Image 1: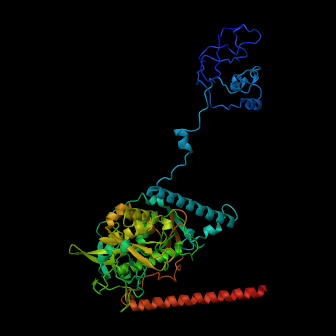
Image 2 (image 1 turned 135 degrees about the vertical axis):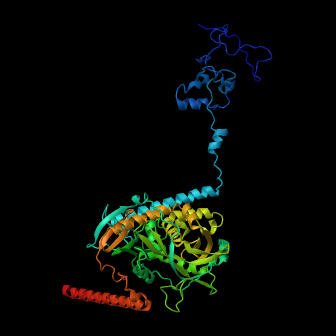
Image 3 (image 1 turned 90 degrees about the vertical axis):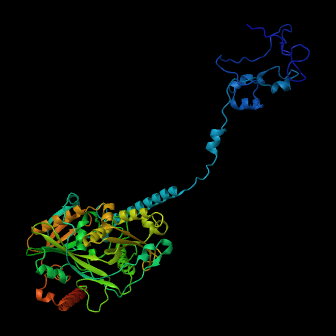
Length: 596
């Protein structure tokens, strides 16, 4: 069954219908009278399909090769390829018919170009690296380096200790060792976690009573307030001036006040500040407590950690463990103490003009050159039966609105910007707050103790110096980059240091020790856990490091005799230690000879 298509004229001269109608060449040769077109392929289609275009010029005209490669009926377009037309070779237009294509209704594939593809395929231009992006990169690199160091440290300690829980090398680290060797004969009486300290509060009458002021002070040089990183000043060395770190029971003035029953508790500002800021401490420290009659003496051992300044104590960055490394905690403590002493003397007007007080320096010999310092012996009332006397230090004096104001001088030191992430020479002038915030994070305990000492001494100002190394690998030469002054009470509020909580800690320790029997005790900060322990120690413990009992009153009038007696005791102790060492060496030699 067919349908009448009509006559299809052929134009041999070009495209389009011919000028004159001619006999159709596509008529069937079987019956010349028929108008049925011959060998026209039938392509099924759906009414929903849309006509794409009139002619498809994108297809490969070599449809025969494509059909051969793709097999018989290679795809839907094969019905429009006249490869199977048996009359195509006989017709006069065989060459034209072989390249003639009918319209394909199939939508063409979307080309992979255009705005969206071009955006994805084009290489992105380098983004602008502003300061914030660089800061994030530095923080990421610092965090990665910190994790690597922590992993390597833990990895080494794990294998050195023979598995998990070993870690002998890590336990031997100076940072994780107790400040004093706990002896087997010591008895632990109590341990107090720092969490209980944060809940304490106690108020003392303010201001306290000044009993005596000793020493002499030089005036502060205001020209140091104008120092900046572009106008730095070299840190000088003061080897001729002597600095004294005398404990409580070695102080002749405190002995005299104790003999006169001026108070029941005696200490120094260094010891009290360590107690007041104990919750912020990380490294181990210890305080020797002596109960003599109804009196309580807070002492420190000679060579104690309290005589040195910690560096990066509360930082998350781990410092090298090797003592010989210039950036180890041990080396940095000596460097910071050395910087602090020299800074406190360089910022003074050294013209010989001094402010003198009731008595001269109680620890200096006649004619000895001493550092500028004044000792204020102040008394606080803790309750009706308990009063506390403390020796507090001030380092300089200045004139403020026609009145003399006491001042404390301390210095922060920069050793390597890689550990802090902030270069003081670049940020100190433009981002001073960021530098101080970083120091508060890395040295929270040290700054809190300095502030507590300034409050105890009644200083009107506290000066903080920023001292840096000339080169990060040179720990002998330093420069002063800036000096900034603060009011102690305002600075205490800024660093969240509560004076009521500080005195609450001291009051709780005093009440606890007053309940103990007469004897000697040691308060030790645990090297790992946030807590302190109280040990009862023998009476002769640390006898070679300081005089335990106050000297008689007749000896207090003659400080020279006291110094000679102390020197003789130290010489005798050194000679005894030398004899013990020689005896031990001989015993080792005899043992080796016997083994051989």
